[in-house]
Length: 252
Ligand SMILES: Cc1cc2nc3c(=O)[nH]c(=O)nc-3n(C[C@H](O)[C@H](O)[C@H](O)COP(=O)(O)OP(=O)(O)OC[C@H]3O[C@@H](n4cnc5c(N)ncnc54)[C@H](O)[C@@H]3O)c2cc1C
Image 1 (cartoon, rainbow, N blue to C red):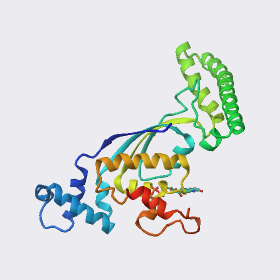
Image 2 (cartoon, rainbow, N blue to C red; image 1 turned 45 degrees about the vertical axis):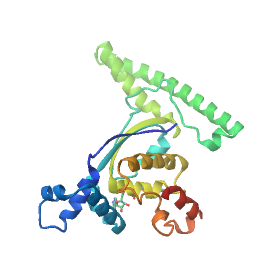
Image 3 (cartoon, rainbow, N blue to C red; image 1 turned 135 degrees about the vertical axis):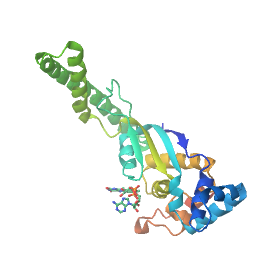
Image 4 (cartoon, rainbow, N blue to C red; image 1 turned 90 degrees about the horizontal axis):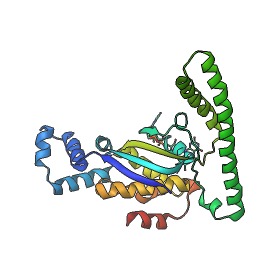
């Protein structure tokens, strides 16, 4: 099951954005601007900014998430968001003695499909173990013959065997990732990935992330969500056709 934790965020972020945005139109310096901003002013200025779509000042505020219990299918989609920084658990360095996997709900709910899927996962693990053992023996002998000591030969052989054996693993493989996005990039992420057109798993993640950031900065994220909550559906012919339902879900 997907687990999302908001690990860090820019403190006092809404005030920072309001101050940065005000600086654009003000003859005074940022310290003076910050002193003049109380909570009420921050909220009303930020609200105006969000309605105007003046987006560059919101890049000053960043959020770092820790995510676990997701598939490599999801992270492949996630890392396509270039305006972000990522650190993901490596299959080159971490040997998966028993890999965890994500079962899509449609497969989990179909008895025969689930059986086929689970058998394939078992087979994958078996093949991974077999291939990594075969390669390990080969590399170990090679390094011993090259006069490495036993410990060094073992370490090198272990790494080199699992980095190739991992090619057998499926997209379903569970993974862990830490990533940082600024608020503007997050808005774009929510627009694309909270949408019904996004795949169920990354949509689930995006909605959980949106809940987390809204708790921290409700004004900043007041218009965040799929594209259709702020205007017509941007998906054109591919629309899910459920605009009222989607708006109701995200505007409450
Ligand atoms: C429903 C759905 C289906 C998809 N299907 C496919 C698919 O079939 N195949 C596929 O390959 N991808 C697919 N994608 C991925 C998609 O094309 C994007 O790569 C992904 O959503 C990241 O979005 P982004 O580029 O806006 O984000 P980011 O990379 O974070 O970029 C944010 C914004 O910065 C600007 N930007 C960033 N880099 C550049 C640049 N080099 N030049 C100009 N402007 C830039 C753009 O305005 C961009 O929107 C799909 C995405 C969704 C949501």
